[in-house]
Image (cartoon, rainbow, N blue to C red; front, side):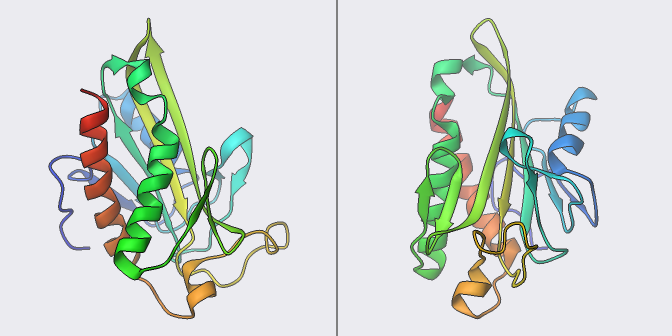
Length: 188
């Protein structure tokens, strides 16, 4: 992977061949003092976390599944719309890079042609209105063509819709650059 083109988010990047969940992994790292901006990317998640305890299904090496660790130390009101802002950045990045229009299903799903292509899971630690830690997990279906029966009628990917391969690392780099700009404005 080429160098991440940000100031601090993703400068510390851990790429795992396989993990149960990037969300669980990064929270464990946070307990042991990991720095803000850590990004954990998995080529395969065996128990990816979705919202409301659901599983995020992914196929090995085909998708973008990662979590970010943030320590904003700001008032909770500053980050009230964080999940929707993350979704907007995903939509913006795919449009900017490829000219493809994605939609958002409030508050944390990204939709393409009426099917789910991505999801966002945001977990926050707050102490007396001050946000001490945020872990954002993102799953974005990039090159997966087949889906398990449970979701095959409601899920899609960029490759399934546009019949070509996409570079998930280029998408990650562009997302992290755009996210970092938004995040720094949000926590001021």
